Image (cartoon, rainbow, N blue to C red):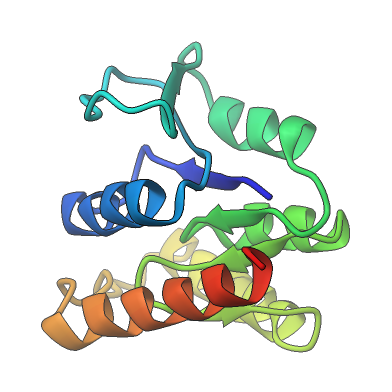
Length: 149
């Protein structure tokens, strides 16, 4: 079992939670991004810089992920692809993406994309709150307890 992180848009506070969890549970955690990132020295934490370009990091995660791996992403299409491969997808806000809810999430994402393309101003996501961080940490701990036996 491996944790994969779509690190281009992953908030720093979430990365810190992941770094601590990787050390505490001795879980391999791989961050992929198209720009340099600092990660703590650890045999459980790896960073891979991929080339710049649309969805390059996402494509690399899909290529490497295995069933029962955990992928941290807020990218809904990436979440769909890894779920289709049998992996688990978790947003930095602690929302677990599942086969049951990913279709509705994709539809909502496409709806907002269409609105923005037609000139409608939409607000971005709210800033990451303390309760979002707690929800993420709780979901991560639950996953690690279930898969590190």
